Length: 360
Image (tube, rainbow, N blue to C red; front, side):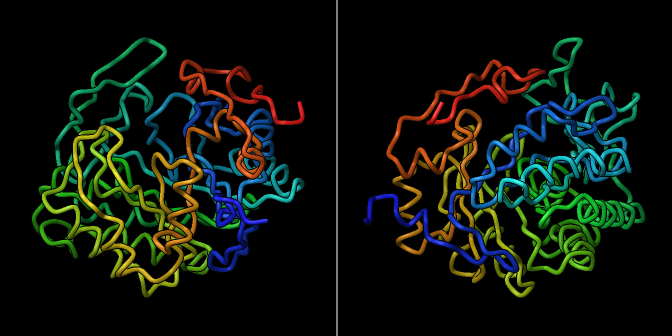
């Protein structure tokens, strides 16, 4: 029987992967990795609880050592981390799920406190303002980053390439390149953070150069049909802005279209409500592969966006925190558990693996 949310339960071909529903789990930083940024059994339990998602996109994960932006986020740059993630992917697959790893460099959002005093790096020497880093020693201001030299950027590309290879060894079904929310690749994309001259600054093409080189390298490890990319042209989080977000969104969609990606993951708005524009229409017009939208969707709105062709799938963030069985709840029209923000980034199982399912 058709219901208002029926479009969410249509199968979808995401590149090489067929998914059973269009309710994706957005990448959500939870700071539950064990010492050494190693995923442990608690993370395996958390992700396996959510295996009914059409696709789980695992949280932002350090592609290379020394670039921590959160306390206790996971990495994928050494053998112990690969082994830890293998425990996660095995647990998800045992429940019939599918999982991509979001590979990431924190850029200027990294902090010396988390990185043995090392200064963060960025396209330009511009610090994040108006916010502070949460550390075990309390809040600390963001540091002014060091501007990366052009000759250092191949090393960044190689780091993403190695992370992609490690993700394959860890048993993931694919990877998502994190180019959103004010982290390194997004910092290069948007002119509020990128004031460079030369081949990596100025025009859309130049600002996208690093992302495209990373994509080419990662697609040499995984075929492009197992690679997604996340972008957020409007999001002002981490002091981000762009003088022409609509033009940037259209440009990126057009440049990414020929790659044959598994999907393009677009944050449709600004979580802080400072920048407003329609970036979905130019992306939908110029990108012809699967388009995943994210940010503030109700199930009914998500279903409507899919039915209208505006999106192919929707990634839910906060609802998946408190509802491990989110697809079942949506299908049943059941009430959703309310998430507890106090436990979003805390330690241990409370507010992480203890939310009840419908049958409990």
